[in-house]
Length: 151
Length: 148
Image (cartoon, rainbow over all chains, first blue to last red; front, side, top):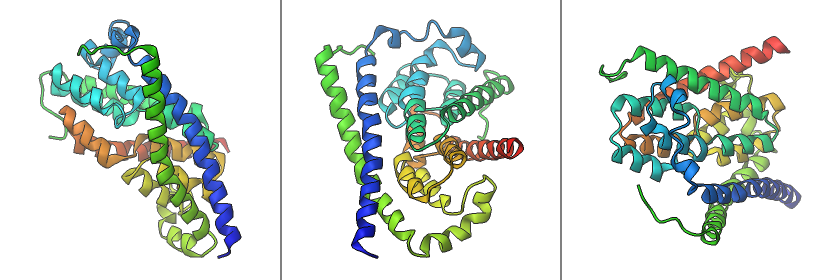
C-alpha cells in the first residue's frame, strides 16, 4: 500500500463528494424556497382524481407529495405532523406508506445515481409505475372499513 | 398547520445553510468509505468477501461486491452506498440497477421509524420495501437480458 494509492483514493473520493455537494446544495435551497408557495400548500385540489385512483383522499396529498419530493427522512417533520393532525384512517396511512415506500425522494435519489452513470428514466419510471400499480391494486383489494393487511 | 412564512432572503439563507449541513454529513460518510473501498480493492479482501455474495447478487446482474453497497444503503443511506459503488467501476446497467433497487429500499432503520410515527405499520412496510426492491431488480435484470 503506497502513499500514491492513498492519494488516488482521496482524489477520487473528493471528486465524488464534490459532485454530490453540487447537487445537494441547490436542491435543498430550491426546496426551501418552494416549500412555502401556496401552490404546494393547496396541492390537494388539482390532483383529486389521481389521488382517488390510488385509494387516497385530498387530506393525504400534502404528506404524499412531501414524501415524493423531499423523501421520508427529510420530510419527516411534515409527514408526522400532518398525519397526526388530520387523523388519516389507517387504510389511507398504509396506502400512502406503500406508495412512499416504493417512490420517495425521487429528485435527489435519481440525480445522484445519474451523476455516477445510471439511467434516470429507467430508475424513475420503474419506481413511479410500480408505486402507482401496487397502491392502486391494494386500494381495490382492501376496501375501506375492512381490517389491516399484515396485521 | 399555519406557520408564518419567512421572506425570500431568509428562506434562501435557510436553504443554503441546510444544504451545506447536509453536504457536511455526506462528506463525513462518503470520504472514508470511498477511500477504504478503493484501497481494499488493491487487496484480495473485496474479491474474497464479495465471492460469498456473488450467487445472490448475480440474480440481479450485479457483482458480489455490490452487496457491501446494499448493506450500506439499507443501514445508512444512498450516499454511503454510492461511495462504495463508484470505486467498484460498475457498468451503466449495473449502476441503474443499484439506483433502482436502492432507491426503493434504503435508510430502512430511520425511515421505518418515521413511517411508524405517522401511525402506519412501519415494520411491515419496511419488509414490503425489501420485497418490492428485489422484485424490481429481478424484473429489470430480465428485461436487460432480453434486450441484450
